[in-house]
Amino acid sequence: QVQLVESGGGLVHPGGSLRLSCAASGRTFSSYVLGWFRQAPGKEREFVARINWSSGSTYTADSVKGRFTISRDNAKSTVYLQMNSLKPEDTAVYYCGIKPDAATTYAYWGQGTQVTVSS
Figure 1 (cartoon, one colour):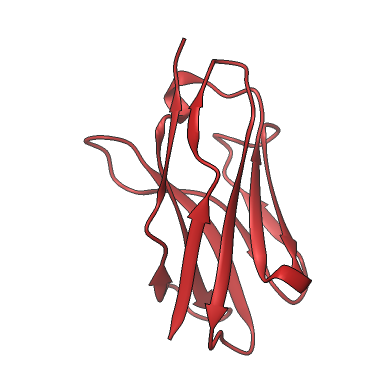
Figure 2: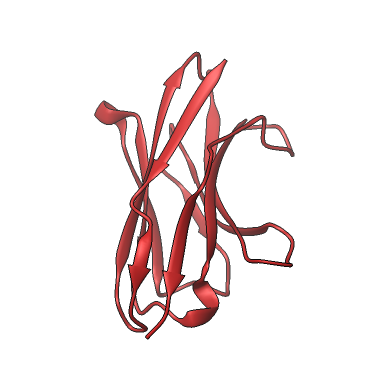
């Protein structure tokens, strides 16, 4: 079992920044990927970014590329999502998920953290 706990969401003005955290605990996989997704009201969950825990390689969705950066802290078993130049359309509940490296679907999810971008 893996537990994921997100934090760092909140209300921010357009153009502002937030850093989300996702702390992982429990029995993680031997080789795994941590990803960030978001879901806005009335919309499907959308991929944002992912990071391979062992190699550190990352992939970011085109919709946020250049504004969002995913990173990890091995010692803290935590993955971060630095979000800059936030726009109202970034408003959503942000979730982190974890999957084995070779899997196509995420096995465990956190509870989500709300990000609201509004003036």
